[in-house]
Amino acid sequence: MALTVMTYNIRNGGRDSRGSRLDAITEVVTAHRPDVLALQELAHFPRDGGRRLRQLADAVGMRPHLVRSWLGGQPVAVLVRNAAAVISTGRIRRPFHHAAAEVTVATDRGPLTVISTHLYPFSGGRRRWEARWLAPRADRERMVLLMGDLNSLDPWTDHTERLRALAPQHRSRHLRRGGDVDTRAVQVLADAGFVDLCRQVGAADHTVPTGYAGHEFSRMRLDYILGTEPVARLVRSCRVGSGGAAETASDHYPVVASLDLTVG
Image: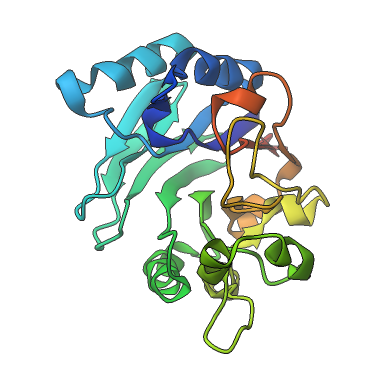
């Protein structure tokens, strides 16, 4: 059993002053045909009885589970292609600026829990706290995927040049007091036992900006697919989905990974 998983920040609900980008977003998702999809920045999706969410979910042939923010941030969601495989749905009940949705699905290797989240963009200290709320999910005996826009640089890369290219007001989001690069959110999750799947297969490319927008970015990796050790042993590929419609659908590229869940 092969399972394709994908995370995608679609920027402000796929709509802004230029109009709707939902058709382009649908094209991106359809091109990768994920079995499980984590979405972030779903502004306006709960309105009109969730019409916009249903429109996207129906277009890509998936069943959605959306979680709203308690603090006025944007909703996140997990979408699943095989609705019959869903065991449970829920939210991580902490005061995230955005939210964290949690869905568990049945696979040939047992239950797989998938979390979609979007960490705080403006403060590394706040991101670290939100990462700490997620860290207990890193059960080394269970299959858990943590996917989303973590808004954090990783602790394994030299970020000097990409930070130098940013305007000071945007650079400050990624610096600690004293000027050190702030990678604490990803480090907290790694220390808890989550594995960076793209890094594991040597495909840790930048996820922002795209051709659409992103003046606050400079070829940075902010979107991740992390997994516990039982998941990391099964990853076969992980890549950033650049090119085509992804250049104009959002200011983030999607990240896509393939897991081999074959038994025997």
